[in-house]
Image 1 (cartoon, rainbow, N blue to C red):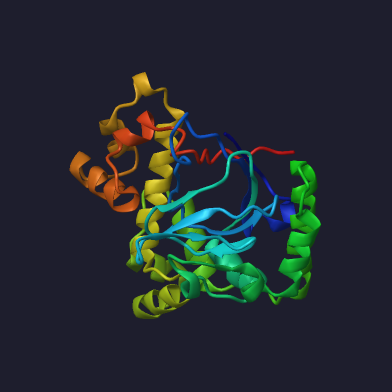
Image 2 (image 1 turned 90 degrees about the horizontal axis):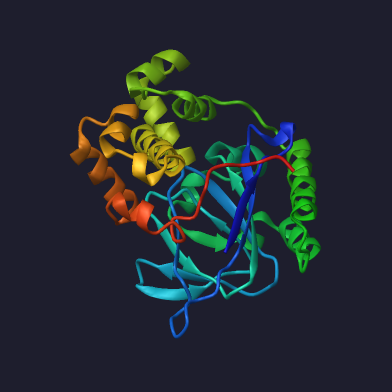
Length: 279
């Protein structure tokens, strides 16, 4: 399996967290296709099946596997998404911040919370043209260039009005200790009720749930970057303000369906690095 993340150009960084490519791994002899997990990272993704070979995405509500579209949009997730791909197939992703979906495409993230939808149906003919340009391209820099052309066109043609929900998202992501709704509303000079209502309409979750996702994400990245022999879960709890280890384990299970130890034991399934590089 090959997976890597890349930073976008400066103009797109307020809206796009990274680009990524993923080449699916081969199954072990006599076994089914390996299952991958996409953790809830507080982001929205545009994903392209560059080889035009569809992935399988597990529909948790219907309890069955469904074929992906050739280019699809995944909403902000509050749980882990399960999927699998044919060995050797190339996927290219655009990881958007939730407010970036509204800023670039005028689509509130609440409309696709915990769902996967056909990007061509939602984003229109420009998404189809992007897919057609990417089809069969194997060079990551070339794929990123096609994506940037698509996104910069949206940036030029969008209103991009700054709003307090976008500001609240950034404040939550940039806070090391966590921010209460009261502190957020005071900082942004709006009422607590107005912030909660508008945040849920735009992002799909409450500010508190989004903050839990971001804390989980930061704890996941911290744990990944630690050598397994030096990793102490008590240190993770202290570093990210969990009341105790039980609270951390409960949050981890809520977002992944597994105990924290699974992350160090199954690094191929927990594959997202959160380490975007340039070029």
